[in-house]
Length: 227
Image (cartoon, rainbow, N blue to C red; front, side, top):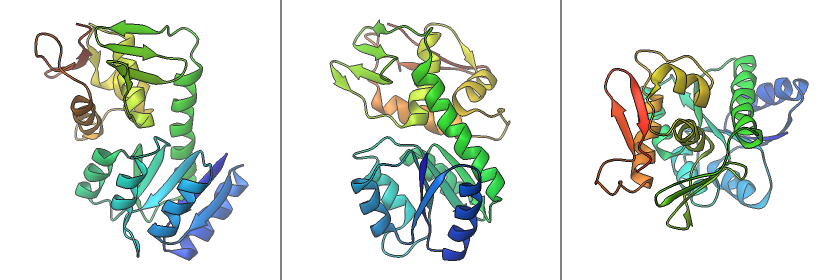
């Protein structure tokens, strides 16, 4: 598995690179946003670890441009764990975030969790393709179409939507959805799911009854409205 680290802190990249290599990852690094974006356009990586504050092009701008042509998993590194940085990163399509300075062992665990969720969703043999009105879900190819057009979803957005579609018409609790789609326990102050679902609602059209496709069941969770 090849990981691209994009961070202007060369010492940190070297430290994280050595540890991730010892954990079985192939690691490459770029130290500014412009060169990082070019590598992502030219080469193939399984996942990118992206710092927010960088010269040339900051991480937010890089992620915004990346999502125009790729849904590859991205983990953001946020200085001092700033909540607004985390929320904006998630809104732009980040799959997970980690505050700096971070423990390399935790970073490795987060990388494995993100990649494992994508792989499990892709290889699940008991999920069948489905059609919900104008929406067609092809589980084996991890693709969701609306009116024949493929939706541009990040890996995490797809995982959330797939978990909801698998239980279409049924309420999926916050705790179950967090564990299934994000691979972590739901916390009372965690807005990760809210941000991703808000992003999904913008990408999905309303039902024929002009209701949002993903409905909030206050205090419990969400459900996918099959039409």
